[in-house]
Image (cartoon, rainbow, N blue to C red; front, side, top):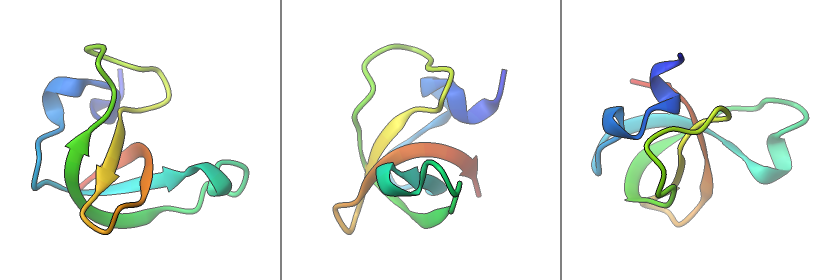
Length: 64
């Protein structure tokens, strides 16, 4: 399983790459720092949903 699909690997303050809802088709990655973890389950096949410090929300695809 991809490390970004496991909630235990995502921490507040971590630098990540997410895919925003409007970028799901293109797969465009947006970099940012995690402010809040929004997914409650321990894992999710499409990535853990987070809110970045700038307020944008998306699913984690990369951990830096």
